[in-house]
Length: 231
Image (cartoon, rainbow, N blue to C red; front, side, top):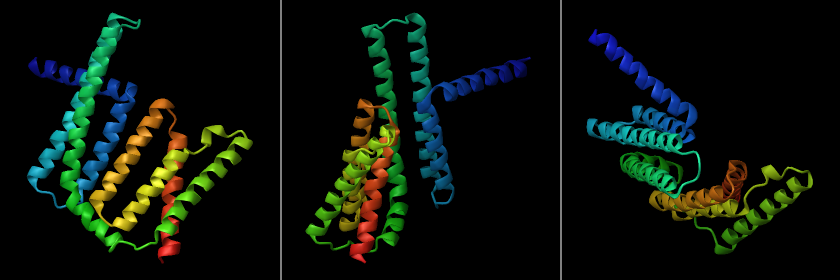
């Protein structure tokens, strides 16, 4: 009898996970990132403690997202109209998820950094010495190229595909910093700033296409420019 109840409880729990994955975009993102992290960890010589910390970090993020979904569902059940207290409850729950994700990111970087640094040094053996004029020229070219592409897409009524100039320039600068400085920590901090810019732009206009295109264009121009100029 208890086995039947236990299996039934597991079924309810799986239904809850299925509902969260189906309805919550952030949960799907967390799951994909967790799978990628686990796959990477399989190919790295991590010790037991590092693997345990990774699993705990992933579980904490998913647990926080589940609690956030529970609270949002309860609030929506109580009232369908806007209420300041309902907004506060949802914002606080989202803040808890953000803190948990931030901790998980710090843990992930701390564990993977030595291995990423070896890969980074293998790709960029030494910093590139490029004149400041050429660096400024690549940034200016990024601006002009992105602006020209925006104009061309606007002319043919493809405004939804117009790349973000700010993200394009920021991505170009971050890539150039990575090549010129040749330090993984500096590169991570540079792209962290780009990520913050992308997040702020997405909050103003929730559309990933212009942000993604801007990031790709800026990074591609920086890489091509370094290969052509740096040799």
